[in-house]
Image (tube, rainbow, N blue to C red):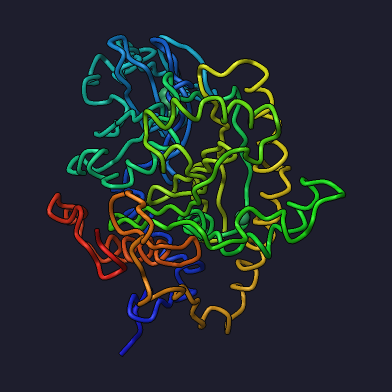
Length: 439
Ligand code: FES
Ligand code: FE
């Protein structure tokens, strides 16, 4: 019998899923057509009429703040002949005017104006039928905007499930919440979107090999090579959600990686964070993914969407987030540390990119596409935390494991197999899928 694309019994993945155009085409429908997708930080769309151009999968969309303060998300495709109706990255407007023949859409997406409606169309065009296509589900969650093409999708907070507890340790650490540092980094990596997204689920195992030279450079000439890697120890945890989300993290007393100015700020705000979130969440540091393609780093403070661009390419859109209440010198120090580490020119980002591009390049080979990858670390050895860690859901008592990767691919397989309309019933939420300890 043909082996499954992902086999949870032995933790193996077919390399086809990263290279096959047919699988990619199905993903656009089965994964990106019915999952909650990250669009932008809320701070990019603040006042009435503010808008932001981004993507849901390969579909260009516009996020627009309405007069009543709500958000609408429109497909950026003119209903006449398909040109973008918004060619700007962001701004403030009262309407979107197509640059091809001049159809005008209001902020609410309705078709408000058509040149020569009377003399060329003989008034024989029902404008009410030609508004912009709209994503039926939009959610703002603690400073982030998500949307879903599936009208029957579960609410976003149900979609997050236990992941909310972990995500909040990052998003909700300070009273005023987080906001984006102005500007966004966009760059292309020639790799399949699942490789970085799954890596952020919980792969901290690569750090001591992949990142050691970058971490030594950051630490300075006198650093001990055995001491520079903060993820050298297995001490920490990994969380895996049945919805495909994952998080790998350690529990640390700051200082962190972002330099003395940020360190002092984090230490000074630790008591209020602990009062707000409890002992463990005030000290969590690591990276995570909200399935399918939103990832965050809670130490370096960046978030990113891995926008798919064919089976062999991903377009990364990354923002730096800082506490709204942070003083200017702290924000600036954080900005510089993000530029230095996780940005298109960042030391650490470059390390990861080299691996991901090379893996994809190898998959051009015929034989390479017939092999399977191994995501079996700690399979059958998942252990619930033994030291009082109180996070919900399936948690493994070590940072080094591929439990979250298996959760990611299990969810991926489930959606790829499911017929439309069978995506994520509330009954499915919280169900265990034989991936690890359930608490
Ligand atoms: Fe937009 Fe014709 S394509 S007005
Ligand atoms: Fe890395």
